[in-house]
Image (cartoon, rainbow, N blue to C red; front, top):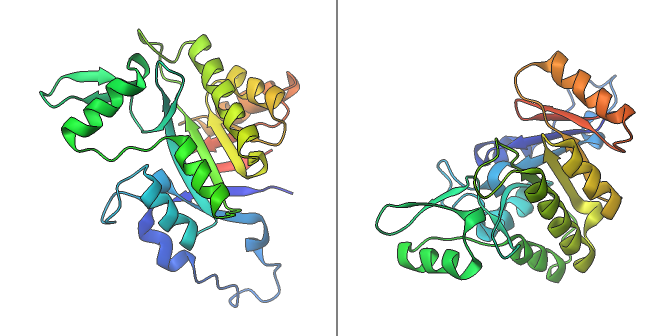
Length: 233
C-alpha cells in the first residue's frame, strides 16, 4: 500500500480538519493512509506564527497530523529550524548558518529580534507533551558552498538527526526528505525507524527512475517527492 504525505500550508488547516468521504460511499476511506502535515511547521503567510518555529509547530500539531520543518546545521553541530543558509545580521550582512557557531547565531537572534528554535527544542516539547504526531525534516542538499552541503556536511546532518531521535525516542514519528541518497542511507543505518524520502524536483519520470535505482542499491526506503507530494515506495 502506498502511504501519501502531503505538506500543506496553514491556510488549509480548516478544510483539512473536515474529512468528508460521503460523496463516494462505495469507496474505501482514503484518509486511513493519508497524513496532512503543516508546511514550514505551519507558520508564515497570513498565519500569526513565524515559519519554522516551535510556536507554529505547536499550533500545527493541534490541527493536523504533524508538521514539516526545514533544518540547517551550525558549526557546532546544532540543527536549527531554518529554511535558507543565509541569515542577515543587524547591519545587513549575509551570514551562513553552517558557517556560524551557536553563540554567533544567538547574537544575531538577539540583535535582530528574531524568533529561531532548534530541532532539539521541538523534540523536547514533543516528548514532554507525549505528542505522537509526525515531523518531516527537509534536509537541504543544494550545490556545495564554502561551509555546507558537501557530502561530509550531509553525513553530519544525518548523524545529528539520529542522535536526537535516539535521545528523545521519536524515530517512528520522524520523516526525512533529501535529494542526497547517501545522507538518507546514513540515517537508515543509524536509525531504521526513521522513514526516508528521496526527493526529486521537476521531472516525475526521472525522479521515479532515480528513486528506483537507489532502492536497487540497497537504500531501504526511498520515495519520490515532487511538487509537495511524497509517495513512499
